[in-house]
Image (cartoon, rainbow over all chains, first blue to last red; front, side, top):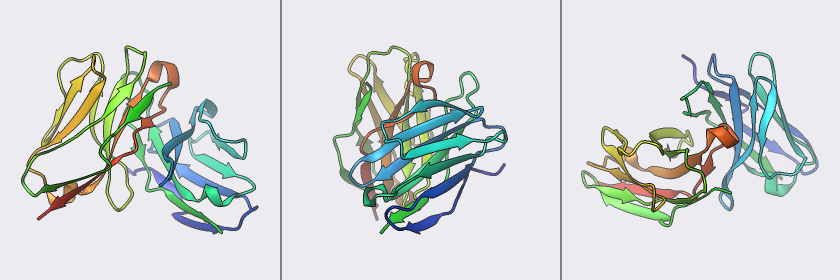
Length: 114
Length: 116
């Protein structure tokens, strides 16, 4: 069974640009969550999508958005990039079946904003 | 709001010895889940162990076990017979699926170094 796949693995962007990150969950998983990891703020929840609907949202500005497709793949978009958006972005997939709480993480996308 | 606190930024242990990582959390909920995740230098987050709050019995997974004290809101991880491959950042995390779906609230992490 393939794991969670995030693309690209590394990305360098310029301030003011926008970026789109992709996450393909484990086959059969319908929940995808996104996290931002930085040395200063640690791991912070961005949002969760389930069956193409955003179910939860963290405390991030509107420049951060996402969506989920009918095949459960998810994309995350950051517009008007700022230096502080440099981070490791992690995606996690879950089945969300009753009693199933394990989140499986991808290897992340390392975004550097210059 | 739920918060998770890991008060040990770094720890080290000799190979084959036992080490305990601390975690406390704050919540007003009664039903929730607690996790320990491991993040090695590869950055891949790996689930180490899970505890359901409604279960009094402490979870164990091979060399890894937890001491779950619900009243004290404490959730420590014990690693026995430490191995070099255990060197990683360890995160304690909280989840309340009924209220917040699959949202994980993480602590700041503890860097564990296993020395030979």
